Image (cartoon, rainbow, N blue to C red; front, top):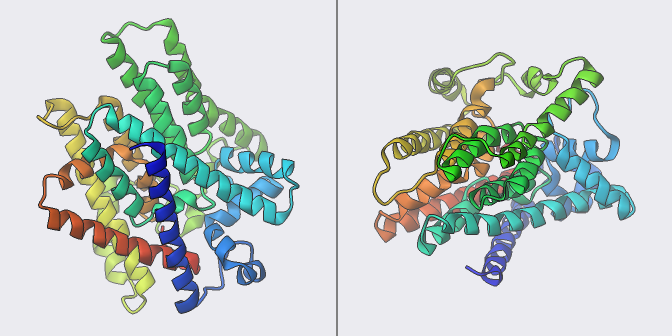
Length: 386
C-alpha cells in the first residue's frame, strides 16, 4: 500500500464520517450539554464543532487558557502543541478549534503510514490491508480525527515501535517520552520497548543505546512534577477520576470486579428505553470481552510461538498494559476509545478474520461499520459514546 492509496482510503473514510455527521444533524435532536464551543458556536457551524464535543472542550480550554481545577486528568502535550501552532496563526477561538482538528487529522494519517510499515515487518500485505480497514471501521475510530489525543498518541506509539524494530533507539526513546506526556498509557512503552531492545540485541547485555529508552518516562515525570507544584499531588490526574461518574473510582479496581460490576450491577440497571445508553454500555462490555480474548491470545502466542502467527513480546506487554490500565478506575466507560491505540490486538483480530469465510468477514466489517455510524451520530449530537 503506497502513500497515494492510503491517502485515497483515508479521504474516503473521512467522507464517510462527514456523511454520518450530515445525517445526524438532519435527524437527531441535539443534546444541551458537553457541546463543542458552546451551544451558540455549535449551532452556527456544527460541521466544525461536532468534533470538539465532550473531552474536546477540555482540551480546547487547556490549550487556550491553561489548566484549571478538575482538568488535570488531561495530559499536556496535545493542548500544548495546539497552543504553539494556534498562537502562530493568530490565536482566535476558531483558529484554536481548527488547529487541534488539523493536528489530529495529520497525526492519524502519519500513524496509519507507520502502522502499515510496522505491520509489514511481520505480516503479509493481505493482513495489513485487513488491519487498516478494520481499524478505520472500528466503532470509535472517529476519535482519531476529533479534538482528542487519540490521533497524536497513535502516531507517536506506532512510530516509537517502528524505530525500535529498526534499532533506531534515540528516536524510539524521544517518541516514547512524548507519548508519556500525551497519555498515561505512554508509560507502557517503557517496559515494552525494553523488551524489544533485549530481543533485538539477543542478549541481556545493556549497551550505550539503552540510555535512550530512559527518555520514555520523562514526559510523565515532568507532568507529575508540574502537578506536584501546582496542586500538591503528583497523581492528581488519577486521584480525581471519580468526578467522571459513579462507574469510576479513585481506588484501584481489579479486572474481575469490573466484569462483575457490568454483568450484575450496570447492565441490569441500564434504562433500556434510552438507546444511546444501551448502545454505549453494551459496546463497552463487548469491547472489554473481545480485547480480553486478544490479550490471552497474545500471551499464548508469545509463550508458545503458534505457527503462522507472530507477536513480539514488546507488543504483548503493550497490549496487556493498555488493556489493564483503563479499567483500574472500575469501569470500561471509555475502553472502546482507549483500545484504538492497541494495535497488537487489531493485528491478532485481523489474522483471525482472514481464517474465516469471506461472508463472515464481510458481515463483521458491516456490523462494525454500522456501529461506527451510530457512534459517530451520537457523539456529534452530544450523546455519550466512550
